[in-house]
Image 1 (cartoon, rainbow, N blue to C red):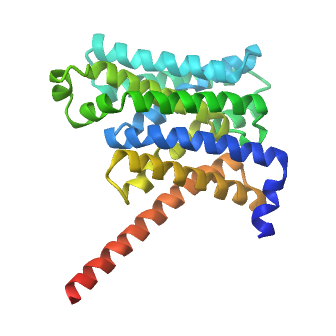
Image 2 (cartoon, rainbow, N blue to C red):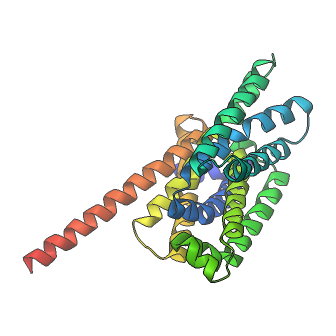
Length: 280
């Protein structure tokens, strides 16, 4: 038991646990929709799209989350504009801006001679440095994200099934799609502090994938994804503490390992049931 309890006796690890859990809840709710709609590429692109905003914010001395948020929102708006006016497909629009934003961020970093340490935090996060102010912001972001997802649930379900049916029912599929993109943007920006821009997709996608093996009902999948996400935060922090590894990367790895374990457990259970049924 001391191997588990000792790390969490320290205040900064407790803040990391609480902050990571808040992020896990937000990503569990939003990530369920991302997996259901096949929008993993958007989450990955937004994670990279934050890079120029974060880099500029660091150089100018303004709050990093502000720069990340502005950059991610700009990319989301740009995707919509390219799709409407440039008549490009959704994936093509994301790919175009993904490359542009990532290149812009690298250019900003390459022109700074004192960016080596900050670049590591940008790419892989620094969850152990979460402050009380960060916790308050994460709590607000999580509350807003869950409330918006609950309010828009009916529209999002209709759009996920068939956008034309949603339009006939008067549910405004374009607005529902914009709400979902906004939720993904919020989750990516909020997760930045915990796991950085490169690893955010792991916390957004893997817990939802793990939950999907056990239920097809969206509310249940969201709740289970939150549980898997919080479990990944706990396991990642323990791995980081005892193995001396980077905390953000350890959490991201734990999410993927839990998704793999969930798949293996569900597959084994299904085979056992099939064997029992055949024997009967």
